[in-house]
Amino acid sequence: MRPSDRPSSRRRRAGAALLAALALAPLAAVAETEAPPLPAAEAFRFESQNQTLTMRYRDVAPTAPANGRTALLLHGKNFCADYWRQTAATLAGHGFRVIVPEQIGFCASDKPERYHFSLHQLAANTQALLAKLGVERAELVGHSMGGMLALRYALLYPQTTARLVLVNPIGLEDWKAKGAPYRSIDAAYAAERKSSYESIARYQRANYYDGDWKPAYEALARGLAAVYAGPDGKAYAWNAALTSDMIYTQPVVYEFERIAVPTTLIIGQRDRTAIGREGAPPAIAKALGDYPALGREAARRIPGARLIEMPGLGHLPQIEAPDRFRAELLKAFELAR
Image 1 (tube, rainbow, N blue to C red):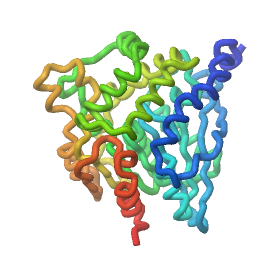
Image 2: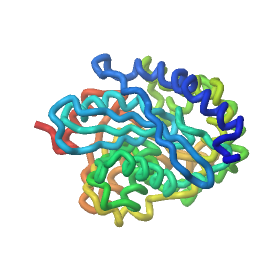
Image 3: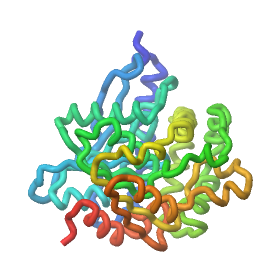
């Protein structure tokens, strides 16, 4: 019996639709009202690490004359595809085909009990999806963990990467080298299992929004809390612990000089996201996640990179100020009139 045919795997797949509904329904309220919902999720089944897995993705057709370009939107660790709906609508409205995957371990995609998570593996999975869809070159928009993944993807597949747009990516610093302590996967799993709306909101308020909080942000926190409380909550928490370890132990910051594609960084200046801050000594914790400085240093080191700073915004400029973000996104794609 293959791992994917086991009863536990079938139960996980059966719960995926309900998990997605719990997670994504609250997120719809975050996007602007004129942004249409993303199309129904499609399934990409593939072999990986001796098991058959399913990655869910959205394939958004152009809503203006097709320009022959494809945008790939890569989500962060605490987010699902639907928070990209406004960005997808903007790019589709300029003639792009837009692909929005949900990585293995996240949202409605499979959450395997045993999987070696690496940025290299997730990049390879994503490249396999694009190959299956007949996409030879894509322009990547990566947010948070998705920005870290986009950098790794561009390093592995420069020939298929036409552009990078990094929106408040994590991984602009090596937290462990700066003194943020390691947390074992078991300890991370125990912490993930305790996740609630209150703990999620507290974390997001402190890191994403620099202490600020608005009603629009509540939907994201409640959506994530619904995932942990849902039928796949235990599997989601386990995969979240595995991917946290991946993020902490696999820095990309030392390879910025090797990026060989046009790159734009869009950096909300109030972002303070940093892995491991909560366990670090106060002096170290205070120094981590300095996004104004991190963005400038990354732009200096990535060849030819362009930096767009967004004062007054935090980790999610596309949610905090959709109109401002849209204008900067169009500049990054060289579409501004």
